[in-house]
Image (tube, rainbow, N blue to C red; front, side):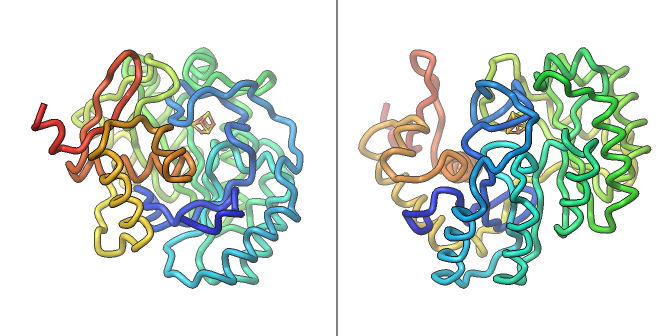
Length: 319
Ligand code: SF4
């Protein structure tokens, strides 16, 4: 979908929160401070908190410059995100500076928010247009069960960091809360989350649930009815994240990828990783495109021998 030499730029992909977004991955696959049970990318081998140039600035600079010399597509956002926690990379402020030079597209930072207790991380984040942190729990015990943090991370310090970020940052903060059934959906936890949100004062609170199979089977989605019921608890700025529905802005590369996926699936059912290999796409790209195709009813997912396969609707009807 982009220059084949580029391994840290992906998309543009349709994002449920940011429209058509070009992703820049600042860390190698699953380099993260957490190991959330719902992580659609699978398990984090070893959660870390140490900041470093996990991908060097020079490497990122070369990929970004190549991308923008070849592409002039209308994007809604450039998103620092991808397959891990972007604030772990110390090159973040230099990348933002470079992007400002090359593009007028707003920059979003998609983060799990765990490092904002560090004043330096907060200072570095000031340069982006919108910060999208997540906060799923307030209780330490649930933090350990649901987000499975790296040693040393403390949920109270994380919340204090988010409150400090709000004080120091003039841009938009859109806080996501992802609910998992039987874990953070209890009245007690919702109460605590509502109090934390009131203290953080984000511009938007986006309620979400598990939409794709996560790292663990324990990650079970709550009902839409539950999200609707708890929505008022988080104030007028709260919303439920809507499915991506802007087909007209969809982008020809994504449409082409969709066609190729359909052609591949017509021949045989495939898993996500079969498609990654067959199409030479990144996991995040394949996940997003499959998600959209499922939403539009173009394909169906089925479980077989513990694996998740995708099939075209035609082949489902034939069998
Ligand atoms: S969901 Fe995000 S924060 Fe959680 S483990 Fe996956 S990449 Fe890290």
